[in-house]
Length: 267
Ligand code: IPD
Ligand code: CA
Ligand code: CA
Image (cartoon, rainbow, N blue to C red):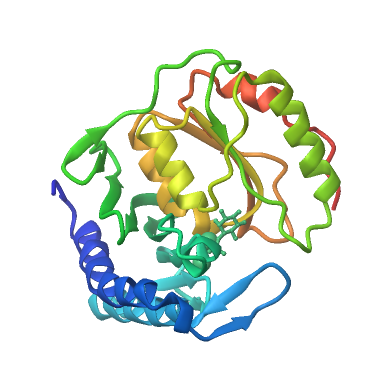
């Protein structure tokens, strides 16, 4: 694999190590102890185990780096310059149901800029990664976004709403509005990180979703950008900068996709 930077290498090694137990756990998914973390949001022991290995490996290399994680919160908060951003399993519901569409998502951010990231599906053995200025890769192959330039014939994915969402109607209205423009039905695969990676490699032409967390998308963002795609956040929640609504695309259909998102924002 064409990994250049020490940070990317640390992420790769951490994911490789964590993938071993994750693959085992996926095989035994029925026996996993599942506890409820809130409506529509489950956390499994595999999530915690994977995150523990990832954090141990990442912090072994750089013990002082801030680490933003889904399960353990924010570690080393005082370090504002360098951050690991970790989602141990993005696509937990797929994982829990034996659907091999989930991934570890790990990014490194320096001075508020994501400089490298990896989205690693241990079951399909697809490793998407990118380092700033070096392009994006799927395993050994350079990837590029699609060349589709009209929204109508594009393949678009989304996700949500979460069960406890306060903007369910807005999300459904937006879904209907966008689906009315498209020739093909909207996809919902259930892993924001993999959806971004799928836009990056041209499987999807675009993806948008509200109410995501930063760890769902951080690694996917740099992979998409380095593959020639474009993404932005819309109607940001200033009260919680880790929450985000994202629009991602091959860049050619971006304006058109964005123009069909609903403007009203309900808090
Ligand atoms: C979820 C996935 C899913 C998205 C949810 C996220 P998780 O992350 O990214 O695609 O629709 O909003 O919470 O819980 O599987 O890590
Ligand atoms: Ca996630
Ligand atoms: Ca997760």
